[in-house]
Amino acid sequence: MDNSKKDVVAMPSNEKCELGYGKPPKDKQFQKGRSGNPSGRPKMRLNVRATLERHLHRRVQARVGDQMTTMTMFEAMIMSLIAAGSRGNLKVIQLILDIVSKPKTLTELMGGRPVFEFTKEEAARCTTEKLMEGMDIAMFEKQPVL
Image (cartoon, rainbow, N blue to C red; front, top):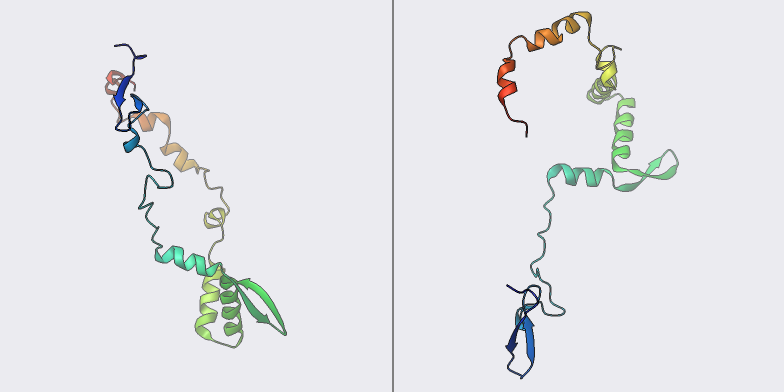
């Protein structure tokens, strides 16, 4: 089939129009000023976490001492907790102590030991020979490589 040959169709207004790949009839083409996707992309629904994070990062005015200052809602809540603890609220004091006493990093959680360092016992259990013990190597050799 010769690709250079185009079909010529007579239009009602006595105009000739080429049809073919990339050249649809004029009445089937997108209209100017009209979207090809009129309903558009659906709006994203916010979940509880996303809504909460959005509001916690909102900037608010708060009084610190005698001055007004701007801070995030999250910072204002922390300041409020500290103020309640300083007034002697035992539940708030316990909450603050629980937060402060938890480990800050994974290394701290591991007791100062680097996260990916094996102890001698762990290294002995994870030698190549031990890992390959239960495996059938012949089965892997027969499988095709993708």
